[in-house]
Amino acid sequence: MAAEKPVTTPQAFPGASPGARLRALLESGELLVTPSCGDALTARLIGQAGFRAAFMSGFCVSAQRIGAPDAGLISYAEMAGAVRDVCAATALPVLCDGDTGYGNALNVKRTVKGYAQAGAAAVMIEDQLAPKRCGHTKGKLVVDRTEAVERISAAVDARAEIGSDILIIARTDARHGHGLDEALWRAEAFHKAGAEILFVEAPKSEAEMRRLCAELPGWKMANLVEGGETPIPSQATLSEMGYGVAAWPLTLMATAMRAMTDALAAMRADRAPEGLMGFAELRERVGFEAYYLDEARYAGARD
View (spheres, helix red, strand yellow):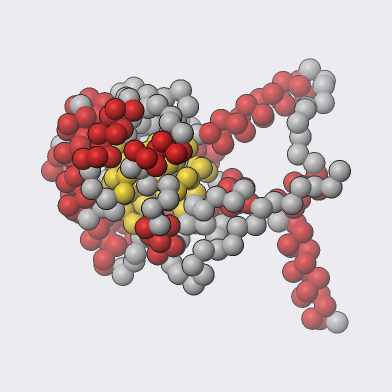
């Protein structure tokens, strides 16, 4: 059987910057669904599937790049390298995880500038105390209100200093140890400091999700972790609630890891793994056919 042709997503708003393209998508009022990636290949697949944007997850990058948990072990340089690789592999605007900014307010500024220069459409800065950790695992702590807001102010200043239009996603993990009221106070303060997208991590019910959408200004982002603390409503319900962005941070990596562990078990038992992608489709999806066309084009120019 011939390989299924990957979906080709035309680049929306050609010639516009990643930030401008993302802003236009958000201003459409339609829920922006962003599957998450940790590497360039996954970013390519998200585009081929017809999605309009992608999210680069720190959990995925830490797992796929250094084989370590999302617990503050990965460095700014490693994350910035992942941003460059992911953004170079897709025409989609990519929302990128900037963790805590990797230090004080000056480190936050460096992170935002570096991500903007690497092609990110948005950068997420959070208020966790370093070393940070996945928002749906135990042991999270947050910095005080003043430092939390300073981080977002520094991110906004960094954007202005380089004349960038990268969007700032401001994340608070205060719901875990301080309650929803504190998380809402911080998110509103982040908006006043200049953040466009607000991300209250780990609300525990649909009622909490509705409340934060009703009370907070600007665009809101939902983080949907299978097996995590937050319910996973339908996309239609998320849109009706008032969310502008819905990220599935672990779905693709969890799917791939299950498939790989199953294939390894089969190989260990001297069985052929099941469910493999055909070689022709695999070549197409990683870009061999486009490479061959370019190769022939330039070879012809020499003749």
